[in-house]
Image (cartoon, rainbow, N blue to C red):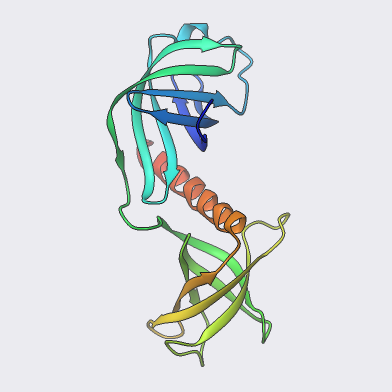
Length: 194
C-alpha cells in the first residue's frame, strides 16, 4: 500500500465484519485484513462487499467488488461510486457513557456523547460558557487516560456542559475518532438486524 491506509472494516459475505487497513483511491481500494479468517478467501472473488472507514466528516461507507485476493489477507477491490458519509460534521459524534475526571478538582463526571472535537459532560455544576477545563478521559479500563484541555462552549439542561477540545495530542485524538467509529459501526449493526 503506497498511500496512508485507514483503519476500518470490510463486510465479507459468509465472514461478517472484519477489521482492516483500507486504502481508497479513485475507483479502487486495497484492504489488508487485520484478522485472518480460518477459511480460504478464494470464494469471495467476484462478490460484493461493504467497506466502512472513519473519516474526519463521519463514517464513510463504500460498496465494492472483490477483484482478487493476495497472500490470504490482502484484497484488491473495485469501488462502486463515491460512497456515503453517514454524518456530515467535522467529527462524527456518538452517545457514550465514559468516565471523565475534571483534573484540577478530581470531580468525576460522565461523557454523555463524544466526538473527535468535543464532549458533552454531565454533573458539571459551577462551570459556565468560556471556562477552561482540564479533563482526563478514560476510553477503556485497560488503556491510559487521555489528557485534554478544553473550553466550555454551551450549558445544557441541568448540569450538562459541552466542552470543545482545544489541546489534545494527535495520537489521542485518533484514539477518540477510532472509539467513535467503533461505536457507530456497532450501532449500524444493531439497526440492520431484524
